[in-house]
Amino acid sequence: MTARSTSVTARALGPGQEWWRRAVVYQVYPRSFADSDGDGVGDLRGIIGRLDYIAALGVDVVWLSPIYRSPQADNGYDISDYHDVDPTFGTLADLDELIAGLHARGMRLVMDLVVNHTSDEHPWFAESRASKDSPRRDWYWWRPPRPGCRGGEPGAEPTNWHGFFSGSTWEWDEASGEYYLHLFDRKQPDLNWENPAVRRAVYDMMRWWVDRGVDGFRMDVINLISKAVRPDGSLPDGAPLPGPSRYGDGSPHYTNGPRLDEFLHEMHDAVLAGGARDGAVLLSVGETPGVTLDQARSITDPARRELDMVFQFEHMGVDHGPGGKWQLRPLHLPDLKANLARWQEGLAGAGWNSLYWNNHDQPRVVSRWGDDSPEHRVASAKTLGTVLHLQQGTPYVYQGEELGMTNVSWSQIEDYQDVETLNYYRESVAGGASDGEVMAGIGPVSRDNARTPMQWDDSPQAGFTTGTPWLSVNPAYPQINAAAAVADPDSVFHHYRRLIELRHRLDVVVDGRFELLLPEHEQVFAYTRRAAQTLLVVANMSSEPVAVDLPGQAGVLAGELLLTTHPDGAPADGDRVRLAPWESRVYLA
Ligand code: ISL
Image (tube, rainbow, N blue to C red; front, side, top):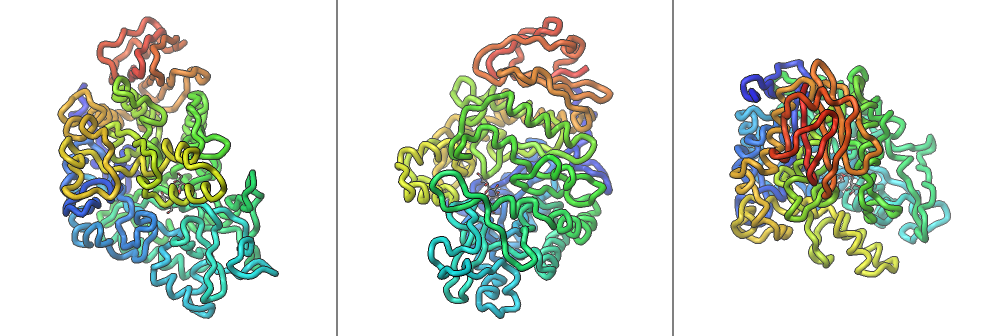
């Protein structure tokens, strides 16, 4: 392979070019990445100290989860000052140094932008809450109790909406005599985007960060900013949730709301169109739970000037049971393939996909859809990476995914810290469920699975901190850690590095047309990408060996074997391929 000599990295693309089409993004969750001062919490200086590690993977961009000033009720997704760094993480000077360190290595920085809500400790909310006559009252969603009800009593909430993090989406404020809306925790009041002054304040803040040198934004729950408010100012109830719950599903009234496209277009023209400080195109990616393919196509259609790409959630839901994420079922592979293929085809030539298995909200994919036993962990982590990275779109690697980091299995609620997990536990136990039942749901899916400290080496606390980590280190760290992976050419880390190199080197990875093969096969994930060249990916997604025929693919199978998890695998025979457990191969012709 001549990867190095012919490689066109995303970094090398000039101003005006959509460099993110060839780019790979690495997500850092600062609290859990690297702790420089021994207080047990990761920080910016910790990240600065690990930039060479990130660069060695070959990624083009770092997306930094929130480091803004925050009471940390939701680990920084509750911001009390958009223009400063939380002392937990460091200072603005540290952030400037991080930006400079990334730029010096040819990488870019994407900030998390959390503007559906603020913290209840943000001065805007303090002013808003002060009285009904506050000039900032209308910056948030304040509503009186339901007619005929007394504020604060169950059922008096202005709507019956159930929150993302359990309970009602409304919090009673005795002092000012109204409820405020919070789709997430009660410490995360929703901003009122109907108010033009709110939108201006957000755009000004974004420009301030661009002027400081950031290269783009990941926009937290950005498709929830437009609520379906009626002309009289009221908000509609949702259809009752199944079971004994007194709540309803409000999501149709705040997901992809009536003014979403308008707001995004306005933001585009106010901020994104201006480009980065160095003249390059900015990257914008919206986190959009509940987005449909049609909506995503319209949001990411360049002609509409909204966002470059979105994180869709459909593929993250294919193993949810009737009770949602807390009732995970075994994966039925054809469902996952059908979903991803639908998005590949649906956005081809129109919008753009973001490709992800993991982030700070999802369990570790090698435990969820791979096989994290010592026998199959490495191969299954590599194979999951392969089938994702060679699709069309911009891949996102979540810290530790490149090591094949695994879920934890804690049995007591006291081990968990995540606000979503704790609220769910409290609500379920209060509703009569047993501790055992609830913990069985939490184990495989809690967001804390993603948030255990990064495993750097086999020293105490995995080299993450010299102190006591804020969340326990996964006991697997002596075997699974960055030092071991970097030293081993056959590691998951080096496999991810090669996948990233292929995207930089081959136009067909960026542009090729996607076609799913064997859609009904329950073990094999196979597809082609076609442009001037043809790329074929064939992967055994199971812990059993398999043999398959790939009709019509004998030509590609006789081409160059670009990448494999099993260098000693049996050569293809015509269109027949035999694969060991979790073996995957990439051919080019
Ligand atoms: O985590 C989830 C399911 O496991 C989602 O419901 C998640 O809450 C949703 O995708 C929104 O996530 C984003 O906004 C939240 C924050 O807690 C998440 O960490 C963030 O990614 C509120 O800001």
